[in-house]
Amino acid sequence: MRYKDLSGKEIVNVKSGTRLGVLGQTDLELNEKTGQIESFIVPNYSWFGMKREGDSTRINWKDIKTIGDDMIIIES
Image (cartoon, rainbow, N blue to C red; front, side, top):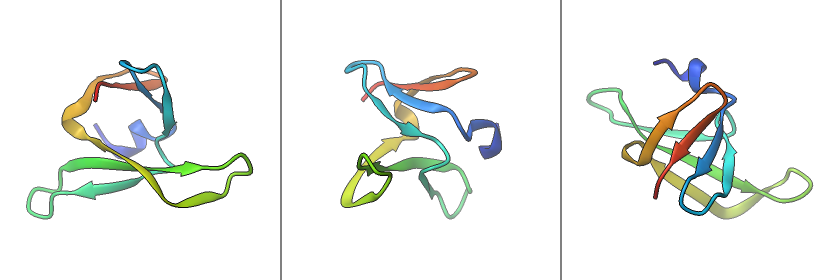
Protein backbone atom coordinates (compact mmCIF):
# COMPACT_ATOMS: atom_id res chain seq x y z
CA MET A 1 0.00 0.00 0.00
CA ARG A 2 1.31 3.45 -0.88
CA TYR A 3 1.12 6.59 1.22
CA LYS A 4 -1.16 8.27 -1.34
CA ASP A 5 -3.67 5.42 -0.76
CA LEU A 6 -3.65 6.22 2.98
CA SER A 7 -3.77 10.01 2.65
CA GLY A 8 -7.05 11.67 3.63
CA LYS A 9 -8.27 8.87 5.89
CA GLU A 10 -9.41 9.64 9.43
CA ILE A 11 -7.53 7.97 12.26
CA VAL A 12 -9.82 6.64 15.03
CA ASN A 13 -8.87 4.94 18.29
CA VAL A 14 -11.24 1.98 18.75
CA LYS A 15 -10.74 1.80 22.55
CA SER A 16 -11.63 5.40 23.33
CA GLY A 17 -13.68 6.20 20.23
CA THR A 18 -11.72 9.39 19.67
CA ARG A 19 -10.77 10.89 16.33
CA LEU A 20 -7.04 11.54 16.31
CA GLY A 21 -6.72 13.37 13.02
CA VAL A 22 -6.60 12.95 9.28
CA LEU A 23 -3.70 11.25 7.61
CA GLY A 24 -2.12 13.84 5.37
CA GLN A 25 -1.75 16.32 8.21
CA THR A 26 0.84 14.00 9.74
CA ASP A 27 4.56 13.37 9.71
CA LEU A 28 5.99 9.93 9.06
CA GLU A 29 8.75 8.17 10.93
CA LEU A 30 10.53 5.79 8.55
CA ASN A 31 13.04 3.01 9.11
CA GLU A 32 16.16 4.28 7.37
CA LYS A 33 17.35 0.81 6.36
CA THR A 34 14.10 -0.68 5.03
CA GLY A 35 12.07 2.42 4.16
CA GLN A 36 9.05 1.02 6.00
CA ILE A 37 6.73 3.25 8.01
CA GLU A 38 7.34 2.85 11.75
CA SER A 39 4.88 5.45 13.03
CA PHE A 40 2.71 8.44 12.20
CA ILE A 41 3.06 11.66 14.20
CA VAL A 42 -0.29 13.48 14.28
CA PRO A 43 -0.17 17.13 15.44
CA ASN A 44 -3.00 18.47 17.60
CA TYR A 45 -4.77 21.53 16.20
CA SER A 46 -6.75 24.24 17.98
CA TRP A 47 -10.21 25.43 16.93
CA PHE A 48 -8.77 27.86 14.40
CA GLY A 49 -6.56 25.33 12.64
CA MET A 50 -3.36 26.51 14.29
CA LYS A 51 -0.90 23.82 15.34
CA ARG A 52 -0.26 23.72 19.07
CA GLU A 53 3.42 23.49 19.92
CA GLY A 54 4.55 20.34 21.70
CA ASP A 55 1.22 18.53 21.40
CA SER A 56 1.28 15.56 19.07
CA THR A 57 0.23 11.93 19.05
CA ARG A 58 2.54 9.12 17.91
CA ILE A 59 0.80 6.15 16.32
CA ASN A 60 2.95 3.06 15.86
CA TRP A 61 2.37 1.01 12.71
CA LYS A 62 1.85 -2.11 14.87
CA ASP A 63 -1.14 -0.41 16.59
CA ILE A 64 -3.10 -0.20 13.32
CA LYS A 65 -5.85 -2.84 13.31
CA THR A 66 -7.79 -2.05 10.13
CA ILE A 67 -7.40 0.24 7.15
CA GLY A 68 -10.79 0.85 5.55
CA ASP A 69 -12.01 2.97 2.66
CA ASP A 70 -12.52 6.07 4.81
CA MET A 71 -10.65 5.53 8.06
CA ILE A 72 -7.81 3.83 9.86
CA ILE A 73 -8.75 2.03 13.09
CA ILE A 74 -6.05 1.82 15.74
CA GLU A 75 -5.89 0.24 19.18
CA SER A 76 -3.41 1.75 21.60
